[in-house]
Length: 143
Image (cartoon, rainbow, N blue to C red; front, side, top):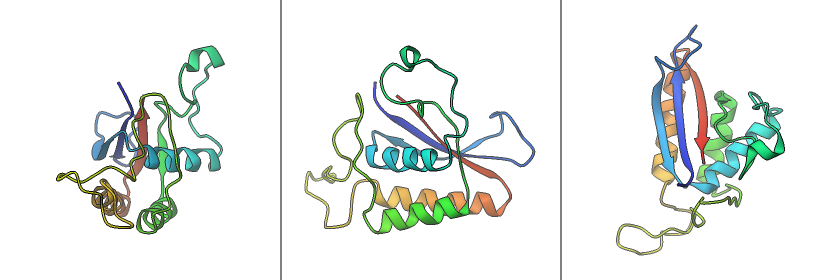
């Protein structure tokens, strides 16, 4: 149980996910989750599920939602990564603050570094490549 996060690209003119290509995967990266949920809300909550409050259970309506990502979103995401500006975020089974995990040697990361930073930047790079090829980028989570 916990927070599982995915990013993928979808070919032009495709509506289902059979041809999607995964370009990112995270486990309990709660800071990224908080940033993506804020982005979703700023876009007016696209693809919001039609659920009652009882059906939502733990968390928010952002669970299992496809969040479309465009170039401006990726630019803002890269800025947040580089400047250590992800918001604090927590949820049921989301784990500890993903900015303060230790490295493989159980040592703290240097200032403005964190466990997923290289992975996050690589995701931005791969997502930009897919957008350049006219594919559409998405983020989704499950918890």
